[in-house]
Image 1 (cartoon, rainbow, N blue to C red):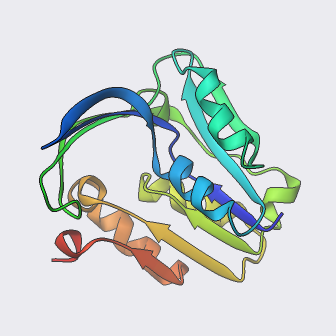
Image 2 (image 1 turned 45 degrees about the horizontal axis):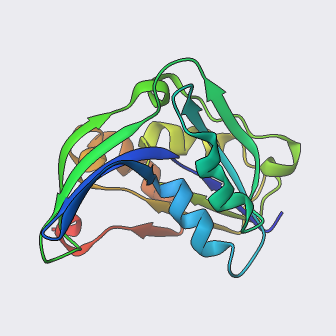
Image 3 (image 1 turned 135 degrees about the horizontal axis):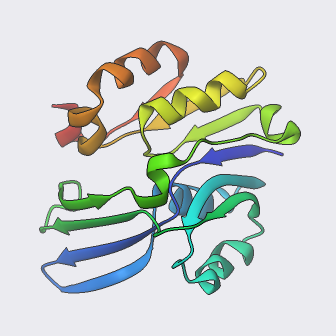
Length: 175
């Protein structure tokens, strides 16, 4: 395994000045895995609900992404609703529904625990720490976060920082 991605596989509803899309494939785990798969092997750990359109996973399968760590749980899939203006670096979160993610506890298999590189997607910092507690000795850990977690889980996010090598935030979240 070259890269372990632990993050959300979600359904997003997005508004821009150019249109609106409802319940489209989203999530930090999804898009990081898709991009990274252009360069290396990727395994995903995450959770979706029983309402998730499984054909959406074909997007990742076609890119060779290993989805063995993706759980399906009873309940609704994580959903995020947001709005972007002309500055795509500044998302306005309109609604976040954790749904099955609220009770998700990432479980790393034997191979995943040995991953040398880990990307912790934009998920609760508490979950990010649980992943690191299971990992054996990653050489590089990168964590993503956003305004929702910065505001609602600031103390947990600050506790995570000494355990990671790279933090990804956009300029508005950094301020």
